[in-house]
Image (cartoon, rainbow, N blue to C red; front, side, top):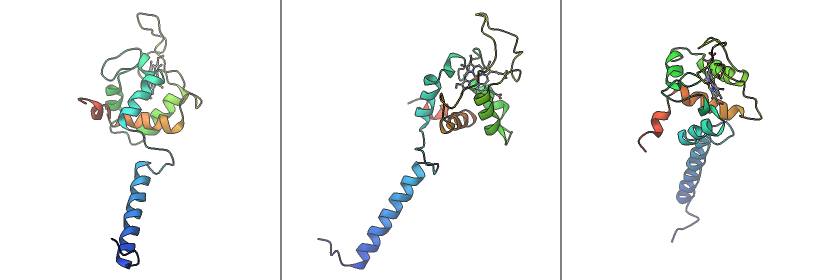
Length: 140
Ligand code: HEC
């Protein structure tokens, strides 16, 4: 039986609770929203329709995520730039915007508003691309 009044047990209990709370905050990513696992972020690309035009390694309508990660790997402003490209749309950075695929789809990146993708989701998706986090989900 624990002697509840023993101050050493109390100090230990406080320490354990503090560590648990710190761990909880760390898991939430400190942003007030729960941090998304790489699997969850990968699922967002399908859910939000990005995979209709993007693959990790193969060019579809848009450039492969691997090519995007490579192009921006030494750019310290990459995260913000890609965030804006997806939010506001993008054209002319990768392809001639007048060009089309064999199915006649124009090679432009459509803007994605907040009703469709929250800021937190979009930031997580851009980081996932830049850090090549698909590697974390492979081979599982
Ligand atoms: C209709 C097809 C289409 C869809 C849907 C689409 N993209 Fe794109 N995406 C493109 C094309 C085409 C480009 C190249 C645009 C250019 O040349 O500037 C592109 C470019 C990008 C880029 C690079 C932008 C840059 O500044 O270099 C990122 C990042 C990106 N897409 C992410 C996404 C995400 C995330 C989604 C899902 C929310 C998505 N795309 C949905 C077609 C699409």
